[in-house]
Image 1: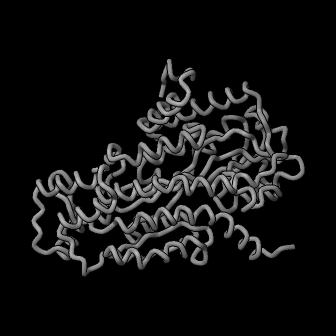
Image 2: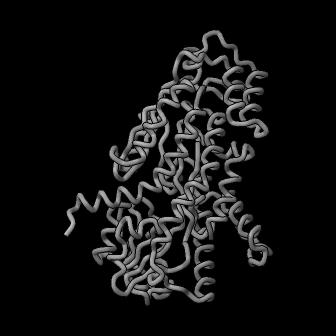
Image 3: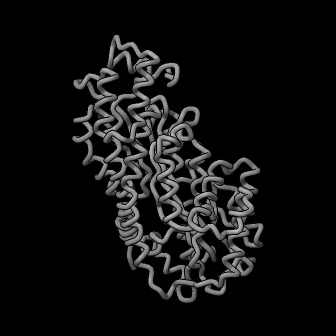
Length: 409
């Protein structure tokens, strides 16, 4: 029998193939974080930004006219990324001899030994060439990352989309249940969110969304193939995230029993038979050995409940929205690289596990998920604008949907 350490090593190697793809996005993006000191009447400047501007560019007078030029340059997609960076540097008078220091905290279930940390560290020399001295800090606990970001210990943090809702309800609704049926829907959405036209939605009080990466669809894993519909889940035990009370409520509404878990313990509970049902991305099948929980008579319902994301959240006093715009575009440019790795992991799921469901059951799922979205929107948990945007994308790809003629989101 393999030791716990050996199992953890296997988990780290497989899950971090995906996470390292996200790290590539960060590696591409971070060289763009070169100066956070430009602002004026149209670009609010915090006391921290003013102090740093005074340090790196003493005597620079930021007029409304200069601020307007900086913003126009940052958002001008007719220029290349490098052209925009250089123009911003020149306009702001950024001195090349002094580096800006930033700390990026990365949630990684493995920690310092994982390829995320390695991939990030490999970018340091490149970042220094752009005048950015970045300290990458891996965290195995997502909750600790959140607290350190709030406390200002981290200048930015890579976290799950579900947790990102705490900082930006608009992007925190990207992972809404049933909002994005396929990865194609997700791609269109992330393209929209990477546009300068969405920039105002990316900043919320003290935080700014610096990038969003796909993490694949969330599917239902069951230990008995007879649990192939919502009605048949009644009376079963379902793992739910302990920090998200809405999941427990939705599970209870279908007559099932919610079992509070964290992201680490939930797979173990499924594999040990403590819970009958687990929602997880397909990349977890082999990495977390979920075939153990499905053996011998279980399976995976072939219908994604949501498209999930990873989001880089920065403190706005350390990363102004104009610079964050360049980072968001870099994230989207790496979309295909990340999806390729996600699909490679998903392809490892043997065909025998798939549970095909009839169309009438799919309709049942859609109705339930729409009702849940509306309820959570009315309770101010989901962002109404994001739900509307997702509905428009669904209708763009399939105009025959009933909600396109009679929209309620």
